[in-house]
Image 1: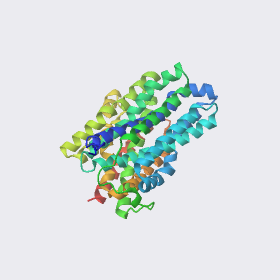
Image 2 (image 1 turned 90 degrees about the vertical axis):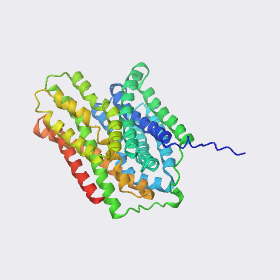
Image 3 (image 1 turned 180 degrees about the horizontal axis):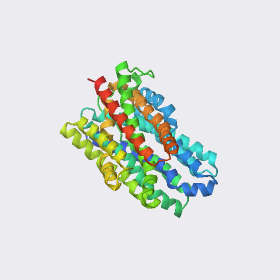
Length: 392
């Protein structure tokens, strides 16, 4: 008698989500590794903080060039295979950084790791879609989104003490080992859901229809503008709070709540929106209230009030936005379509925060970035209107 070693419980979509969640959390931890060890890198490599900023950004840079081709290659050779390759690249890049004693090898390792992270980001989203389309897709995407702030928080908690007690090299090796552990978990556990088109039947051609191109591009622009607005707030609000009498340490602690609040708010909002069947209400309401709260921050007598509102609502749209591509793409085009979706994200994340910085310099006003973030939320609402019109 032949016993099925992969019973239905192993094929549970929630188990698959957990496996993919772990991989994406490892990715976020590795992204945080440079920021958490910045003072040690400055001393050891004799570099300045401008180069630290460059290293942080290099993790995102490959996405502009790799997201779309990566989705197409995943479409042809299988999403799981490409995610495993991405985890290997993360491990290789992390190990190279850990073994480095000068700046250029660290740059090379960061680029290699970032390339692997792009493959993971694009194709993990596709894999979750395959398992949950038509069944708790918003809740699943909301849970997946939480892996990013959770990984950043773990990096903040673990990596700085590890660098202080051991070395910054130990942090890089630890991030690489997280990628290896995720590789083994994914390789041994993950299975495609029934009915997934065989990768060998899919070519390298991007066969999106004009309707799919437009729909997934609008969805990508919404994800881009939402994330740009959020990152600008995280990056520039400490400066705004210091003008109100807060110390830099106090300002950093207050603004960090924007990250911690995402962990409960994103899945809770996604679940409520799905169960109440009111996605547009949660999406538009979350973007609108977050944008208005950001606009009020520079002018409020007590900035903690609008900031508290912002911290509560800023995570509400995240899972709903991540679920939008499922409404625009056919199953056989999800991998390539997710490449298009994330190309918008990486391009915007690479370019638009700099525009906010220019606005801050030109106006000499700490209010400028907050108002820029409000504009990003408004553009996200406009993109959503376009997306709904296209998909009617």
